[in-house]
Image (tube, rainbow, N blue to C red; front, side, top):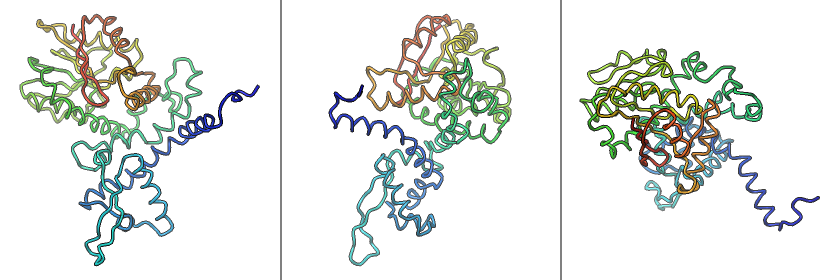
Length: 362
C-alpha cells in the first residue's frame, strides 16, 4: 500500500521540507557556536558601526579560500535574526559607493562580551560537546529504566560529573549567572514580592548572582546562598552584611528564612524529588508567623496562550531536561506538586518572555 497515494505532490514536498528542516536544525546551533567562538558580535560592537565583509575578514585574518564560507555563514545568521544586512556609504570612497554591511540585532547584542546582559556563557555551556552530544543517545535513554541521559552518556549524573570537572563546573556556573542577569532586568517590576521579608534563602544558586541582585535591591534583606559544599566553597569569602554562602544538600535541609527562592531548580527533577524539595522549603519557612512563601522562577508551559515560537522554546527545554530526568511543567502540574507538598495557594506572574514567577504560600 502506498501511504501517500492520496496526497497531492505539493503536500508531499511540504512534508519533505519539514523533515529536512528538522534534520539540519542542528546547523543553527553550530553557526551560533562559530559566531561566538570568533567573537563576531563583539568585533562589530567595537567597530562602532555596521561592518562590511571585507572589514570583518580583515580583522579575523581569514585566508582567501574561506572568505566565501564566512559570507555564507553570515548570510545564514542574518536570515535567522542575529545580524541585519544594511546598506552603507564608504566615507573613504570618493564615489560614495554603496556597500552591504552587517549590523547587530537585539539577539547579537546579547552576545557581546563584557556587557551586563551577555548570554555568551550560557550559549558556550549549552553548546559544549560534553553536553550537546548526549542527545545523540535519546533512543538508548528511552529504553533504559530510571537512567538519566547524562548517566547514559557520561557514566554518572550531571552533578557528579560537574564536581569532578572543575573547568566545566565553572562554565556551568557562569552560564547560570549570565541567565540570571535577565532575571535582574525582570525583577525591577516585581519588588512587591520581596517587600516585608527579613530573610530569604536562594537554593541551588551557584555563585549567587540572583541573591546579589536581590541584596542590592533590598539592603536590609538577609540573603543566603545555599548550594552543595563544593559549589559554594569558592564564594564563601565574598560574604557581606546581608549576603552569605552556606553549603548543604537541599534534600536534607534548607536554612530557615522568611522565603525560599528556587530559580530554575524544580525543572531539574522528577515529581517525587520536587515534592521533597518543596517540603524542605515549607519546613524552612514554617517559623514565619506571618506566613512564609516559596518564590519560584521557571518555565510554565501554556500551549493554548503562548505563541508558537515561545511554546517551541519551552518544549525544547523540556527535552533538554532528559539530561537530569527533569521536566518543564504546565500550571496544573505545578499545582499538583504544591498541594502534595502541603502548600495552600499560589499565584503565577509573567516574568520574562520565557520565565514565569510563581509565588507559593504556606
